[in-house]
Image 1 (tube, rainbow, N blue to C red):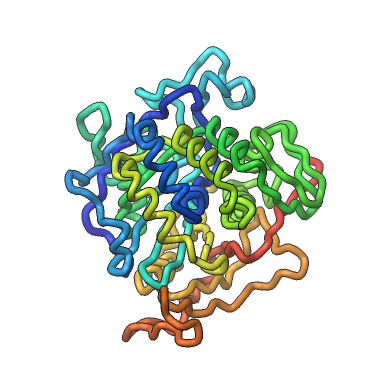
Image 2 (cartoon, one colour; image 1 turned 30 degrees about the horizontal axis):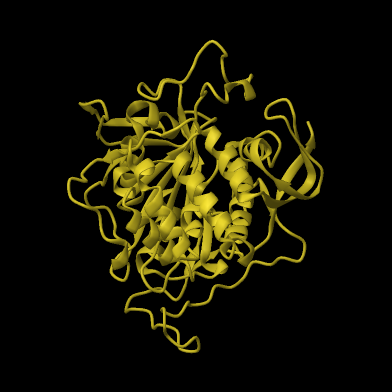
Length: 427
């Protein structure tokens, strides 16, 4: 069963080696899972590049001992935090004149001005395997426990703080501790990526095809993005602009942006799990190399064997069991421009993950996304355990609900569904 809150794993962060210092909003989510999913070639890549990957890792709170072996997923789930950092790095700040002051350069050691604007927790279940990615809004107001600082000392607990300020407060350990306390999930591993990394990784992938719906996305003022309705293959800076756009989709809010990001993530999973990628050894090696150079992991995530095991654990998960959801929220009582946890709606999600039942999303796809024409919300089916005959699903344990039905305030989709950006048109 998915492990609920125990001690908080201590996430040691690694500094990104080399010149590729990267960009935020990617949801490296599917990458870490699907990248290594196909074959030993990814395991080889993990071994080959492990020294670069582990050079500057960061330690998570409470991880003096090793986290659970991913090979033991039959007994408990594994949870990985991905943080996308909005940071004005020297190599990329010229791309964002509205956000970055050309006179100021981001300093990784002080974390000044860096915001953890994208916050994803990926849960890989025990058998039968399922992958669930939960997006937490950047504007979420929450309490945060104390956390250890990489430079030494401790950041004290706070009763109220905006989620995207936690990285400035104390690096990835502070983000991991707060989301672990909020969700009850023990976060075993973590990684962060900056804007530059998104560009490098999407270049290595060779592009991700997304569907743009509504009136198209025309957010040239804020991100430079202009996409007419239809299919588009996004690479490099344009992929980053797509992930960053807020004004161009839905109602212009951060919640709408999450829905749009999930359009990209589900398309990314389908791309990475396709034979065209998994059977191309050179492409997989290039992806592995770029990922290891572009992502800053926790020290717990630097073992190349564990990297391979993560991918192997998700290798045979059907697309319908790759589920992307938004953490449910309500309007904040004290600030109409912020949101607060909808704990009642979230509890159904945590219970379903703990009992490892298929998630049934009854809410919509989020304001920034719409189902593509002809797509319908599928009824989830029980996934048989690995090696079991497909006609004989694993019986649910006593007390397990008939389904993982989620409330209407839990929005999202799975990777088998084709979704489109809900473009707002010319602003």
